[in-house]
Amino acid sequence: MAYTVAALIVLFDQITKALVEANIALGSQRPLIDGFAYLVHAQNTGAAWSLFAGLTWSRFLLAAISLAAAWLIAAAMSRSRHRTGTVLLGLILGGSVGNLIDRIRFGYVTDYLQLIFGNYRFPAFNVADAAITCGAILIVVYSLADKKFLDRLLPWLETKAPPADDAGLNRRIRKQLEDADLPADGENRS
Image (cartoon, rainbow, N blue to C red; front, side):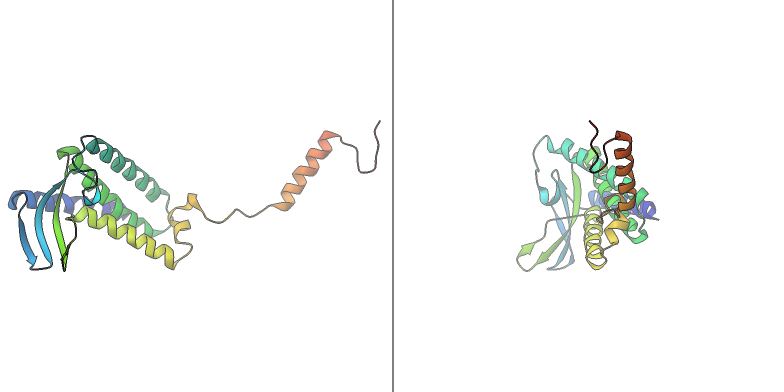
């Protein structure tokens, strides 16, 4: 199910980016909800909010980071014991792969949705960005609501200490002492 979600995010992301590139001139905008939501056509060579944009090395670094993130998320999905959490990881994986495809093919990511809140223009984003953000926010919400959520989502990072096996430990210590042929209490072996 989670891999299906990831694949659908990649597909929807790539289709919407292709439609924007074919129908909206670079740098222009069209109102969706005038004064609030706009379709724009922007090319982001940086990371989120255009961080590192314009740096020649950023394309390769960001692609490598995206590839590593996708690999780690896929590994987490394969080991997870939480169905909802795995679907949320699928959102993040799909978004990461969607933007990675753009970065490898073009050297930039196409952004096309922009929201305006009063005088503040939220940076343009795309379906992949929205999937990553929603998946991450929902993982945080679930982990705050359910203390065992992260243990089931990422079982190899269990936050609980393993139960102590005092009896087993004491048996091993006694066995080592016996094997060492040490004198018993009060006994002198000279």
